[in-house]
Length: 244
Figure 1 (cartoon, rainbow, N blue to C red):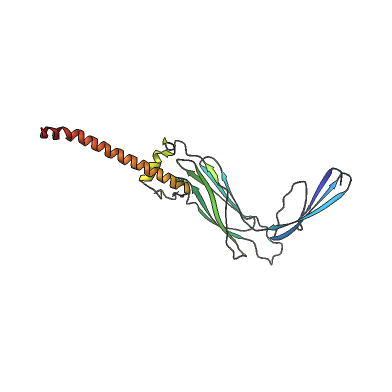
Figure 2: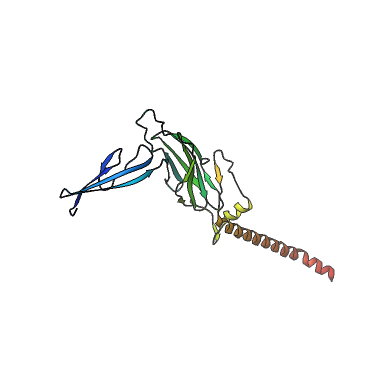
């Protein structure tokens, strides 16, 4: 072929399409043969084949709606089999919203979801989230198709979310007033109904904890020094008079 390609013909075994770029949803899993035929403006053509492996997996997508709201969408992309004797490819999904933050992130839900989806069905949920500092959020999930025994797991990419307006006031590099307060008075759960505070520890948190320990120690030493100085100021003159 030495002419200009004018047609791209795709053969997916269970369907065809045309175009330089296309997409196709297979009705079943396993190894599939995909054939591409190209035709140039002289009528000459060339064909090539490739084998792809199709695996079943629900589509789980995490989307940032705005600075305080995220959306979780879970979709079963499988197509109902044409043969009525074949088992439907329904899927069961358990998903958990995970957060990476030095501080607690307040969410408008518990962040744990379970859904059973038939072919083509979709589950969607919006969650409002707030934190005094920027944080990362993602979804980890397990899934099992109705006609399989294997339980698989996966996760979405993480989203970077900003701090809520008017967040913690910075006391210095890497410190905020809320850092110290959350260290001195750790909180695991918000008492409000249906609101959960999730705290996940990472390797970086070890550094943060050391910094907070040092800050706490400095505060304690400062308070003790002030008390000693105050005591000396109040009691010292009386002791000196007695010594005279």
